[in-house]
Image (cartoon, rainbow, N blue to C red):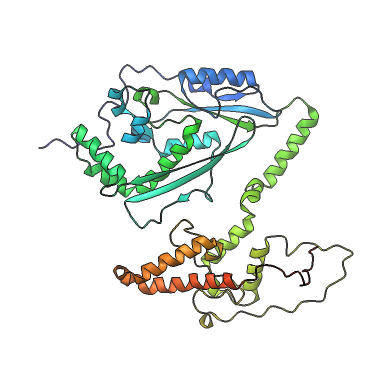
Length: 421
């Protein structure tokens, strides 16, 4: 019987060194530092004995109500790490060249744990696949997150990673060269990486974004045996001043009653997102009657504007006539419907704005998207999907025509709308 072929994800050397020292007690490096002196001392000890992941290696001062929280955990080398790629191994110039072959990178599970311990929030609105997804062996992903620095500032981290596993792609050639050096076949690794290419790109993009905080591209087996200690700034409101203590308690109560305050200020109220999801679940062509028009008006104006209370001294207004009902779905061509008073729920299928509704995409993205669809319609190799592409192209062209017919602004001689000064 021939010997079993060794997988790429199996290490050539034992994952736990025989003479490894027992890891330090995790409780020693867990807790909260109430002063800058305590935080600096903890950071210094953790940096000498553990893998320290932190925005800064020292803390000079802490504002009132702020503290530094430390958390520690161990990584399962066999389950939560994988053999570092050739490019990642080359970045560890502090490791001897004969030891770089045993370097291992952190997988998605420990990276997510590090991100949660650091308080990193991966922003779904700014994390996306950059390429159009037309090639199954190529993927480029951009990861964007934010965290709090020791001084309370919100820091944004962002990076992207390309995974090119095409026949003559950079990653494919690196895998084949590495397999030739070790006398292995590259087919198993190429098959595994191509099957999980999106997850691999997401993991590597997040790893690159976290490198500014101390996460390395590859670790030796000895380094992975040490605990990972994460330090982050947290607002606890703990203070000796009774006035500040009362104010901090009120701030915590407001934050608990309005948990999405910061996110709403950055990305808009949640009502807009709910209406977008509702439009996706029930296409606009199926909405008839005044309810559809009212829903679009609420989406365009934002929550609270239509129902804003009027001043007590304002004279009563005459009731406005009800808006005309839009035509039935059969009378409206697929994708038109904007002129009838409601928006098309068709979405961008590929490209930089993939997943957005057509009315949410920029003019440049929409123009590029229309050209790409026209090329796909004219491509004889895609004749099987020509009818669907032509129908979708009509939706895009209808959106472009609608934008070209919209007024650019108010004329100086026209009367100002009510409420404008």
